[in-house]
Length: 123
Length: 225
Image (tube, rainbow over all chains, first blue to last red; front, side, top):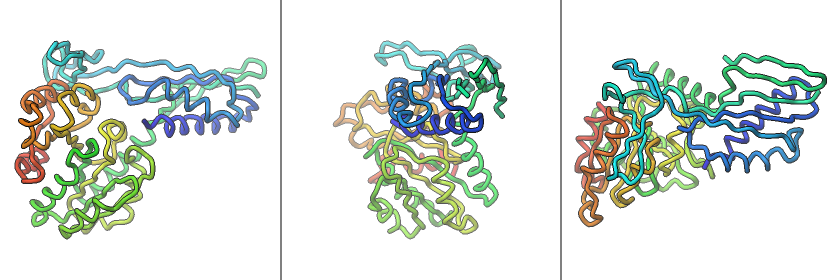
């Protein structure tokens, strides 16, 4: 729901870096979006296209890589992909912070980010 | 701190950013600052999230009534445009500040920082921050509070927990509200409780009726207040 404001921040940050580099055009932006964020990839793409319209980013390629959620258990030290509980009573598999090894509550360590990984531009 | 590496190929420059520039990090850092600022003045802050109509304001009213002798309380009230709720809470004799977000779907650490500047932290011990009515977006933006609470009500149907697991992962306490309507709605609150615990084993759950005040003591205990 807040893809437009997030994408505005992304575009602003890219333009700032491009200005520092004295670039005349931005040709490619590579983003990494964690699967535990609430950002819809299609809405980010849609907002991006509109926001870059009157800037040196117009026509640039937007690469979006999705990153899985990772948890770490403070109890037993388990580190790995966020597990899904597949109980037919829930109708859908639901993600859980329950450590698959010891059953204690684990913490999210990856998958909560929305990151600019690289920017390609022309001087 | 991000490490920038320039790869130059003729007139083309590629800026590689390691480990990357996290757009959400700005909010996380501001939230950390808020937390430090609140801790300096020993103010305990609680973020209250949940859908429109879940009962957030009613619960805050009941919490304020029960706790105003014990703590000096202030309330930040996130609202799109009105001050209706602020007036409701203000009747209980505590300081209320409305944060109008316009069209934004959540509060963020920056608007909270600005609101904090407008109150005197030495004069309060407890701060409730009522987020914008929305079960999804606020979870993405920590505000720097000691605890985060999600309020759901049985009138939202039987699937709101399993449909929004990531929201519940971000909460320390979950409230299942409108327990008096559970039977009419054919909702088993024990089942909802089980689902919340399944998603986050260490979460605390309180089942309440914010209008009568039933279960509010349980919530106060869950909040360690």
